[in-house]
Image 1: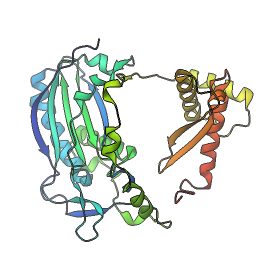
Image 2: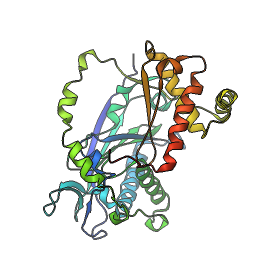
Image 3: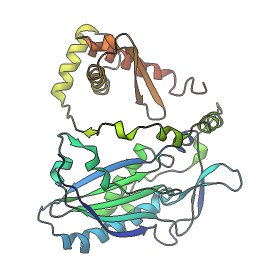
Image 4: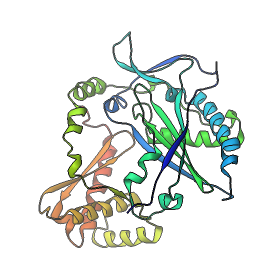
Length: 340
């Protein structure tokens, strides 16, 4: 049974860039962005442990929380599209990210009685324990934050983000910038500012039009209705730490059988190990072809292998070979064949 997890919402507010600090702007979507229009928000959790650990609740609300809000406002000055909305352009009829003076993000403050160290630990835990730490993202908003206090232990920043406005690297850039401004109190401490120049993305293959046509046929509501919630198992989460010593053991096993393998990197080895474990855990795959999909910064990489090859004792070799070759094929261009 999961430990008790009671989250009480204490405050609902909004945070905007400083008044007059950002001009109104409209950002058209590129072909990198449009695929995400119909998909649900990305959710992320960032946990911060108090140091010293005896930080009081009153100190958090009187000092730390106001500073979090102020530094967030300054960060949004640089990352203003996050405070904007996803709308249909009255000029083009296409989706765009629009920011106008006064736009802001939802900022929820809550308090939890859950065990902070249990939630941040590597051990298995029910996924439902983490759900109360993220707030909803109602359209047309693009970002919503929830700060949840765990008295005397730490706090969590829960993020709901529309993927159409930012990818993982962009979110990391925003979080690091916010943290830097929090430490220094000065937006000038950010030496690497984001660029929103859409003209830098050249769509020579007409991918945006192709993708818009394809996503028009996606019925997300019908897809969700097909899920039989009553028969679903309760998902769990766990963290598996793979250190240098484990990576080297995996590398030795693979190169002993396949010394010419390209890209025998920690990424390839770890992904292959996970792939093999998934195939073995599911069982009864036989000679069916199975796939492994991974992000390659601006697209997706696809690896495939026979399930029976991955389930063998040397399945790590087959998995590493397939993923390594898929990465090697990206040398021809990560968007090669994307129009198909």
